[in-house]
Image (cartoon, rainbow, N blue to C red):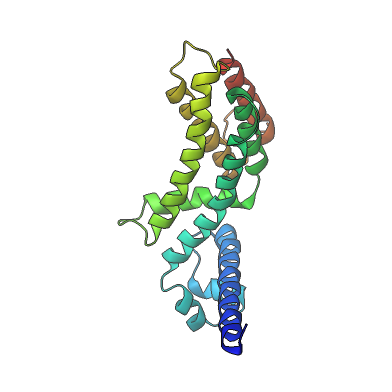
Length: 213
């Protein structure tokens, strides 16, 4: 590598490292303070950079919000991709999916995603750069569609059910409930001391028993 190429590579690597540092800092502040209450100065301070430097990377807070959401969606896509490729039947893969939601719901990322969905839904206009997030979301859906298609073919799910509609509804319900529990320790009016993991384990058993052929 000649000196010019080495310089360009080092410059690019430095820029990518700074970008990752900013996004990580934003994730921490958004999770702690909430998206609405977070200022760009808060993020610059957390990242230990000047506010002018932050604005060179992200001209608006909403662009940074979407960048954090996209970063947190990437490992979810990778997990769905890995589960779709497992040598298991459809029902077994759903058990793994539900276990993933249970494992993930206590992570700070789940709390941010609940806040992000509320922030995006209340925005008067589509968030800038939201297409990047939506494209990744569609990739998650495509991986899940592979699992659903297997369920139609392998007989592990009850044949008297509309498989595609039922599986999609149950997975969406489980995912939404697990995220809700991440932002509110308990959402039930009764048994307020019931642990969220236990609630999700019960829901998983109900869903799996309902689906089982």
